Image (cartoon, rainbow, N blue to C red; front, side, top):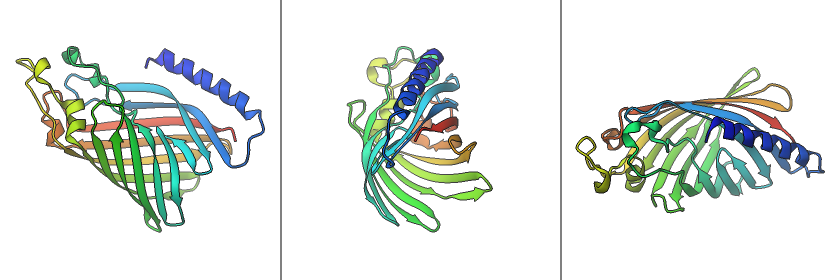
Length: 252
């Protein structure tokens, strides 16, 4: 998505949300809209840093929510135990292969759509959860299994959410993003079949109220890829650093 297209969508979002906010909204709704940008380095060979600007939504209605690409429903939302199901799109993936000119002959990549289930426990030490994502729109038919720990602490008006994740990508996922099929192999780009791969992620999200209605959000995430991904002839690095910045306005 180009910057011009992103800005057009953002303008439409704010206009629509402003009209919606004029109506009488029940108290069990909450809607935040805004703009966000993410910048991440590409692990692909000769890949460029990827910079994207996009509209941001944060919506909740009773047990339903839409946050960070997840459209979910809370089946269980008790003091400790949590169980969520829903659909998800991970917009952080490098579907352009870093715009590397070396891979123009390869098939186009697309953002896969996943169904997910998450089971977690909220304790005095933070949130522990496991999550299973399965691709459902026939891009690679693979899955992701994640084990996550999220802590929380506050310094004055700043809220911090450090998170440690261990992910396992299925062979289908790795092959889709980092494999090279026989029909597209060359002397410089040999055949490579993906295998299941473990990825470690460390991130911290920072949230601050600028005013009672305006929120500033920042997140920094680093990913470490193991040999099943870094050994691919498409890949030139075993780490990816991403920086996210966003501003949200709470309409109701």
